Amino acid sequence: MNQADPLTERQEYLTGGFAELSCARCVALVRVRKSSPQQTSVQWTTRSARQCPTLTADVRPHPLVPTCPDLRTSIQWAVRTGRLEVP
Image 1 (cartoon, rainbow, N blue to C red):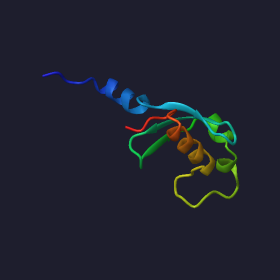
Image 2: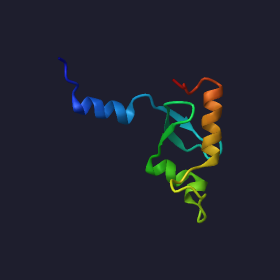
Image 3: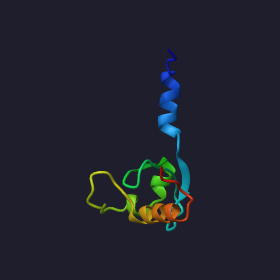
Image 4: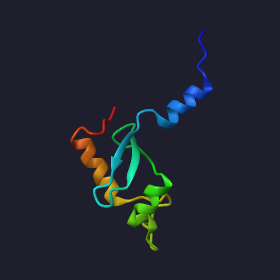
């Protein structure tokens, strides 16, 4: 029986399948992974979060987890053009 290395599994979970993507509005560079048509994971760096006008605005959108509609549009475009794959 072959047991997986927990550190390797963790690294794969945190970085596997992510692609770098820039927001079409503010050019913030994030890492994005589509696990399904409905599920999207976004990894923001401190720099990219500070660069996003939506995330740095005094009034944020309603969701509990801050999100950027412009980045969502950029992700949808990347999926439509094949830049970002959906399994």
